Length: 438
Image 1 (spheres, rainbow, N blue to C red):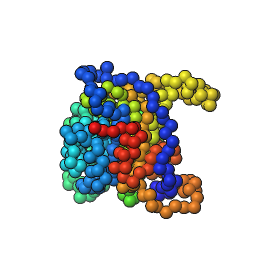
Image 2 (cartoon, rainbow, N blue to C red):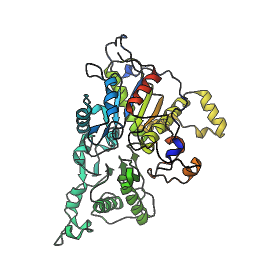
Image 3 (cartoon, rainbow, N blue to C red):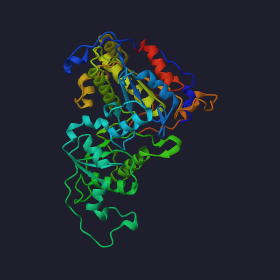
Image 4 (tube, helix red, strand yellow):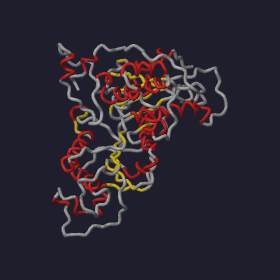
């Protein structure tokens, strides 16, 4: 990670390639009523805040965050622009995180302004009636039911029903032989919320579920293709900040164990959490919803993602921006013709139905046409790292710590702007948007 930092030193401002684009007003299909007075400015943009390292350190606010929110909240305690807080944490409910942020930042924040790593699961309604096994920390059963699942099994419940499967810890082995308590339904999907406490237990039972196609009373079938649905909701790096092991490292173990046994790659039904596009799409939906609740008639066309981590916040914002640009290009005949000319094939142009089916068709298509990334220097990113003589050399030798299914692309970790802190970020965005709150 340190090898990447010098490459972006001095990239304080990228050219704003995205001009303002006309977008249809989304309120007509969403039950908007009443009119909005033109006496107050109506923002055409929304803000996506990372939390740790941007707004808080531990349970203490970063001073710049207090300054920033003085401009973002009016005298009545209402946000003057749509705001969403996006975190890769997945060990609590949205309401819990909203309450924590309200207390720390001193501003009223609702759960509909918070996106946990698991929040986009609300879109996956086709899974809500299935029997799912959940793995992670915290109140995993409550979290799963809160996002819509009706039939949930935890790793602990599975271990209690099949005590002989978890045999690594000799102190926890059954003292006497016991028969499996087969009172659990067949598992149809596995949802990974985050890194568990007992890795060996979770690895063993998840692999058992995958190899038995959800029926632990049957024998292993290593030739099963494909395995049952696997949903990943927390895309932390393989090695996180300060080289701490997290969910990314747990996934490396799970993926390699499965491949060692079956000879096949583990496949995911969906990946969410930053930098997944799904997370940013859900954030855009919440931004749009806030604008409609306030009866702002102008559509939100620009998103600004403010974060401190190149591999999650910046990568994710730029990846979603690329998706938005492709959507605009598909509707522009000249852009499509240019793409066909460059590639020599029409198959290189993604079709509307191919792309938009990824979003489960549960949310309206985005009104935003751009998602711009802003990097702050109060968290993971270190602007004072040693600069090697050859930046290109350090790029070539960089080890990508992101998830296996995300390819390292230098362009995706190139921030649109680098600022000192979140207060400067808000000032910059207001200036870019020519927005003056009243």
